[in-house]
Length: 370
Image (cartoon, rainbow, N blue to C red; front, side, top):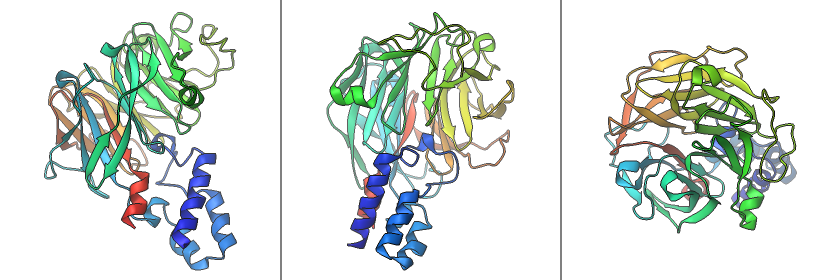
């Protein structure tokens, strides 16, 4: 009964607050314990459990939550996965990646997961829509349900999900930063909102990779980044009336800030602890503080790639980066207090034309493992 009560308290807190739902929203440390859990434990009078469980990361109370590395292969029109080992960077000594999605896609690029709702979002520009799949894990095996349309009439190459279930994506040819809210998805509305438009905002210039936390949306530009901004951070809720589905933004909208302007064309972005990591067109992966107040503070984490594309944080300590030309995914330790250049890259998996990458944490699997 005690684990059941604790799980119920965790679920209720999880629904109220998004900070502990999605790895992109974590601002530091590992998995924070919600204040409400402390009060629930105290209410139950479980002093021993309070010391042994509430003071530890939530997932650790049930056993380590299983994690899966998921990546897209545009050249084969497929998506693949592999289970990650617990508490260490995956290496090539483990099993090979397995096919997760083999039909229905044409050129899958960006990919993102909603851990809490167990959803996989796929950006395939050839489909003319944004799609998703229900995820189901069993041991080392991962499966998907049927394809569902999330947003229609868009050419999507990159996608991200915030802790509340709002889905953000870029429409590169139409110069737009767009979203479909969790409520819209629940109601079955697939016409997305345009939050930032390149026709009114110079910081939107063929937007590519995208990421979100609880307050901001981050995107990379694939054209003229040294002028418009390589990496841009903006408020998720701009101080303007959305006016239905299209914003009425003016140039230099409040809350829009360039975090870096070191490269004209960049592809993948991920958030890890207090930093944002992003890849350029050839060779390099950079890092910059998410709270940077001046431009050109980026650090060259490595220049050892050939064509780096998507990147993803595993929620603990590792960032994974896909290299399209090398047909591989690499990992490195990102749990550093200060950004440091020359980080060692460890090959984690092989996949033909690896492009988009994400990490799915099976939150329900932690309870099963207990």
